[in-house]
Length: 449
Image (tube, rainbow, N blue to C red):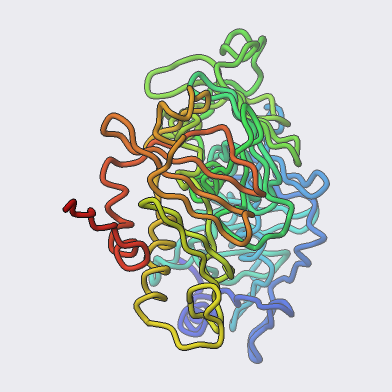
C-alpha cells in the first residue's frame, strides 16, 4: 500500500495538474502556482535515449538533422517532425504537487523498475512508472528525487518502436524551393525548369526544357511536387544492402532528380504492389507503392500545357481578327474594345462584347493531342486558316484550321510560330461563331441577274 500522505498529495495533483504548457514564440511559461519539474532548451538538445520494455532507442542530432538507432543497428534518418513533437512536449514539465519518497518506497509507484525512461544529453533523466489507480490518464514520474504525475501519453511516446521514429519520406524536399527536376522512366524522359523571368503568371511558372522546349502544365507539375514531397513508404526493405543489383538499383527502372538540391529518387526492382526504391543520402532500400510510381511514370503529353496560346486578357491592348475572308483591327481604351480608328468616338457595346467573346474562346482552347513533327500546313488546313488572331502588334498569334473533319491550331509567341500543331475538339470553331457573326458577318451571296 502506498502511504496515505503521498497518495493524498498526488490526488490533489491529479485535480490541478496542468500537464503540458504549449509554448509560443517566447517559449513555454510555467503556471504561477506550478512547480517546474524540469525545463529544457530544445535547441541545445543533441541526444535523446528512450528505454522501454527492455529495448533502447537513441536519437542523435547530426548537424541540422536527426538520426535514430536501436541497439547495434546503424543510424538511419529520423523524422524531424516526430522528434520536434517530443522536444516540445518535454520542454517544460510542471506540476502543482511534487513529493519525495525514500528509495525503498519507489516500488509503490512502479519506479523501482520504470516502465520507460528518457535521458536527455546523457545526463537529465525522466523515469515513468505505474498508472495511479485513481486516474488512468496519468503516470507516476520521477526526475532526480522528485515524484509527480504526468500525462500517460508521454510513456506512449517514449515507448514507440524504431519504425515510428524513422523518416519515411520518399524524398525529403520543399516543393516551393525546387528550381527544376528531371524524370527518367519507361513512359517519359523529360526535364522541367521553373520560370525565372518573374512573369507572375501562374500558368507560365513551369517549362519543359527536354526533349522539347514548351510550356508545362503548371497545375500538373505543382501537384506532382506536392504529392511526391508528402509521399511516405509503408516499410523498409533493407537498411544495409550488400549490392544495388540485389534491388535492381544498379540500373534503375526510373529516377527523379531535383536539380537544385541534388536530391534523387531511384526506383528499381518490381515487387507486389510496388517497387524497391532508394533516395540519395541514405543506403536504406524502401518500398515505393504503385500509386507513387504512377505519379512519376506519366507520358510527356500529360505534363504539357494543353493551352495552345497563353493569353492574359487584362494585359491586351491590340487585337486583329481575321476570318471569313475579312479582317478588322481593334484597340482597347479604358478597358473597352473598339474598332481601330474609332478612338474617342462612341462604340457599340456589342463590339466590345464580341471581341471579348472571341478572345475568351481563344484563351480557353484545350488541346487533346500534340503533333510535334507535323507535315505540311495544308495537311491541317493551316495554310489558309479559318480564323487568325494577332495580339499586340504580332507578339502573339493564333491560327485555327480544319481538315478532314478535324480542327487544328498553331501558335506564335514572340512573333515566330512554334513547330507544334495542336489537335483540338471537333466543335472548337463553334465557340467563335457568336462573336464573329457581329465582328465579321458572313457575306451574303451576290444574286445574278
